[in-house]
Image (tube, rainbow, N blue to C red; front, side, top):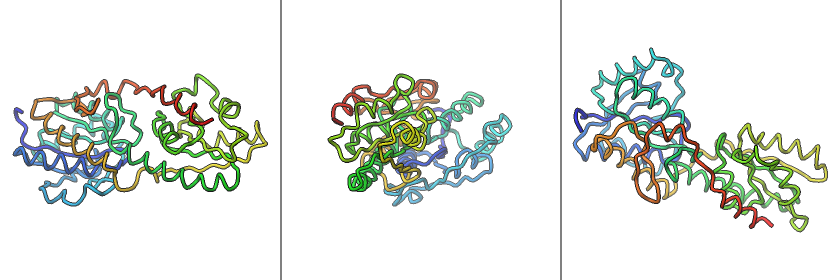
Amino acid sequence: MPGINCIGILTSGGDAPGMNAAIRAVTRSAIYSGLKVKGIYRGYKGLITDEIVEFKTQNVSNIIQMGGTILKTARCKEFETPEGRRLAYSVLKEHGIDALVVIGGDGSLTGARIFATEFNFPIVGLPGTIDNDLYGTDTTIGYDTALNTIMECVDKIRDTATSHERLFFIEVMGRDAGFLALNGAIASGAEAAIIPEISTEVDQLAELIQNGFRKSKNSSIVLVAESPVTGGAMALAERVKKEYPTYDVRVSILGHLQRGGSPTAHDRILASRMGAAAVDAFLDDQRNVMIGVKNDEIVYVPFAKAIKNDKPINRDLLNTLRRLSI
């Protein structure tokens, strides 16, 4: 670990339950290894505006159960420019920060990769996103909590759907990935999931109406990923009204409900393991990698792979959903 005495931590992009558990794990693992830790507020914006505070072990006490991120998060157009990144680098140097842990999704790790390359700066990423769309890890921090939130919401909506014999489209997050929609549909006993990964292959709405919506059922629930590829729940509902007017259709958009809440045990454990592994990566002289979990083992995934490669949907899960929705 040549030259690393102080690690900076920031959270960036959309918040995800478990980010605080990751901040806690990085902080305490680093202090345990004799390193200093500094928290950077408001993501990359805080790097440029110099919102940096030294963290001791008590700074991360009693946060493992909290949703959101104590470090806050913000969008930062300045960091997208070479001038902004140069300013961020000078602020890091002023604070004696030798390495950086970035907790966030695809966009956040893309920024980390560019910065690390430009300044030869050691960065380790943690996959903090409810979408579960980063390649190289079986699951991301926040995904399990969001999935459980979706399941609980759909359970409640089903009561109304059944009472009124309606077709409900429930829109969930996942602009480019259908993991929440697909697994949420299986977990909640929904009839179908409309996801971006197969929208170019089949007309999912037509297939649903022809095969999935049985007359023997007095209601039907369909989870829809919010992607522009699927059109979203509102657009699908409009199609049903025009093309299949016999159906009484309703829309429910879960929105930011999915981001909030106390993280599940799974997310707390995952974030804790990944946070500790980030410090281990620096100790092993690793850099420009994302910490992932494959088959319950910690792995180091190069930024280039984590960002550029599309994470494939499990086709077996699609078949399972179809079989169970009859």
